[in-house]
Image (cartoon, rainbow, N blue to C red):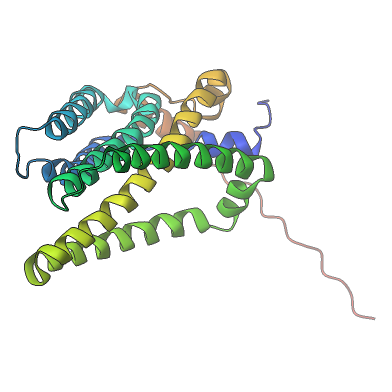
Length: 254
């Protein structure tokens, strides 16, 4: 008989299905490509471009390695998501600095230093809020009520609306609208990236410290697709015989 798993452990043990890893990597790299392309504006070969290109290239190579065998990369993909969040935040920060110094004409080093400091403060704030939410059971309560899935769908919807608005601004409003919308979009992505980093890096270390419990909860972890299908079919065969239905006794009306 298996040991009972706490709600906190169940929250951390929610892995991305292996079938979705390749598509997820492509989607995430495309999102990061948008702020990276901003660093190609004049002057093109700048330190901003080299940083963004190096970060994006590193995530691309790592993602390609995970995609070779996604059925053995479910735990590794958790760490990938966490470091992807950091990479996304850094790329957005670099794009914002490029826009401020080479498009808006800011020349004070104080802006760059304060911008990086705010990013680090946000990272520390999300770290504190994340652990407080775990201690108070906020994540578990949201999962029981189905709010986690709804929040994810809402975030995707707002992101789609935001990017649509950005490209409309590029096409219609002109340079000022493009600059304002770009700064707003990259700031939102930066915040999202920091939050992903906190949640998934902590999840990865939690899994590493409770690997035996995860394997008990998810026995097909690391198995190839064929063995997973065979284990699923075997489980279906074992549970095919239905149990006798329990009929509640009728109470006599007096």
